[in-house]
Length: 322
Image (cartoon, rainbow, N blue to C red; front, side, top):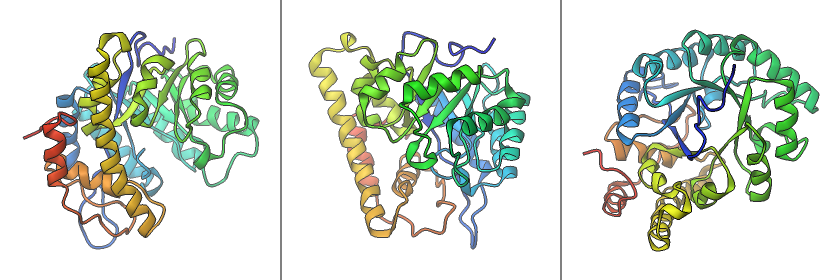
């Protein structure tokens, strides 16, 4: 039987890391740098994140071919075997349902811990019935695995109903869907209602709002790997930290997000609507591993982030990997 508990145990807020997709620095379209995935896996183990979502979830899955996404999945599974930590959730969604099915079949073959499924974002589903039909087709090859629906209204335009009602309809039609990853929704009342659904796990994004995570019922929160150190403290039940300690943790977390996100916002304003350029640059600075550029031919983020890395390390916002 498909179980949410096998992915996110009840009684804690699990942390879900986004490791980025590494690319080589070459002329033309940069190829995926599979050789760096073992290093990223080692970092994920070092920071002790609970789970990873792999397969291009940081705005880059649409730029990856099916072959590349399958190679990425196989490489991660070679690095982190079934039963090892962290758990692996493979992102299988995409515009082509046949691709989604092949990725779902691969997830089953590789015994992934779960899958993250999204609906086509180019050919938008006109209604909830079409959405459900797409989900059934996409998940058919991995019906024995727990699945999480990727709810991102700004991208997928899937706000047919309030989140709780939408998820209930989807869960009733697709029994393997045990939860949803929510992005781009700031209405905490809607999120709280979704979190209250029985036997349904919400993965919430936006680590600047980790304080509500501990009291609103989210099963898991998404964070970049450099955020795990501070996020571990921020997701503890409120009564496990004294108020002063909690406020300090949240303040440092706010500094972390505002500094890196502020750089992304400036880049976005200057060069267009793409927001992970500074994130990838900071990941390279923090790890000492050049994870390469974005797949799209965007101007790179040239600012030196070494001082920011050192400041955040001193404040224990990020773990030193030196």
